[in-house]
Length: 236
Image (tube, rainbow, N blue to C red; front, side, top):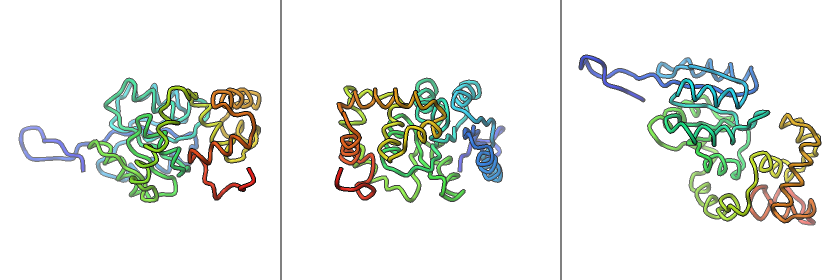
């Protein structure tokens, strides 16, 4: 629990944890809000359906925790995390995502998130993540191994932390989605951008990585654990 000393020295009382929710699916957001508001020590002080709104709201309200969807149209969760961590050390970030790939988790943690919770987790998982973040601890869904994540972060430091591989947030997203065999049209729909824009990001991303074909991209993604080898044919 998160406690503070009551005024007048009359003992301890619960301190409310102020939370902002950011998810572009209204039904999901409302469901999360209802679950969290059932907790005596959690208070929802703001909610938004877009990344820019999340950044603005955190700056204005300075909440204890931002619960943030990883993939939103426009400014995505990774960029929101980077911006928030750049000017607000007070707010802990809990990423809520349907993606359990280690590379997504690593990138979120690298950008400053303190917790990563899968959307198929229980409500208790999310509540535990919020309470952990408030007291300065890191939290990962039980399906994610912290030991594996730490090992993965070290092993992929040359890719994720190398300034010579300077992918933008959007290029990083496109890399993951292309590696998962999504078409340009599917990527455009998922990210909420034009198909022509996807092509531009894809070309730029491959140029920066020194890749010239889809097969090379798949090999690169497998080598750096961006995708699982079991999901792709060895013929690439």
